[in-house]
Amino acid sequence: MTTAPAKDGPGADRLLVRRPGPQELRPERAHRRRRTLELTLAVAVPVLLVLVWQLAAARSWIDARVYPAPATILADGWHRALAGELWPDVHATLQRVLAGYAAGTVSGYLLGLLMGSLSLVRAALEPLLDALYVVPKLALLPIFLNMFGLGEGPQIALVAATVFFFVWISTMAAVLAVPAGHRDAGRVFGAGRWQMFRHVLLPASLPAVLVGARIAAGVAVLVIVASEQIAAADGLGHLIFDSRALFQNDVMFVGIVCVAVLGVVFSELVRLAGRFLTPWAPRDRGRTQN
Image 1 (cartoon, rainbow, N blue to C red):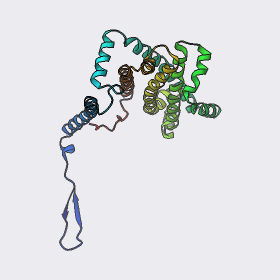
Image 2: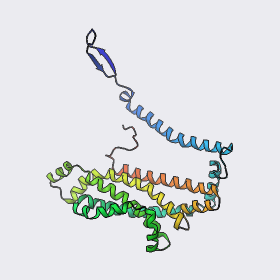
Image 3: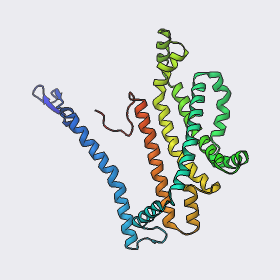
Image 4: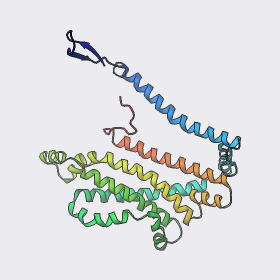
């Protein structure tokens, strides 16, 4: 932004002249540079932390018996993967997460649509669901154990209950947040209930619903790991807890890394699905747009 005097003398008016910057002159090039910088930072920060951790373990700044070096964790994880000792736990955790996530997402979405569309249903159920929402979900595990017994049922039910509340809240709030003008426009054009849902409520609310679904994906991984530490004979949570009890800290960190990778991949898959389903919605993370 530059200024040019309009007339001589003190206090003279000045004309503001805005000169186009690199983003206006070469938007594609500026976008590529921004994306390259973001990707570089996203990779460089974790790599730097791992290198510092490796150096601290090699120089004995930390106790390598308690905090094994990343190279040791990687070697142990690679060995367990080749020996087939890691995959059963990964499969068990993944199966429980997917089953519970699917059940919780479908039920939360349907009830959220119903409560967001019908005020009487919302008035009848919202106080009860609000009270249940604040209950720590791990506190429900004994109830699910009594209901389903030992096995997969309690784990899946716990994940489903956790995901349900996140999806229900985001869906109901998204439907209620649809502007009244959108609904009025649909009525003016003679839209029926299904057309109102298909062409008005669904497109307007789906971006916010998918944000809640993405948050629920990460929380589902956290809940299943905690549940497996308490009431499971396999899974990554059981692997972490059992190896810690046996002072196998390298195996414990292998389980932690697997949980982190699983959570990131699951969350990213939900985000990519959201971008595919809602191409009209702004992209997240503040990324530069074309």
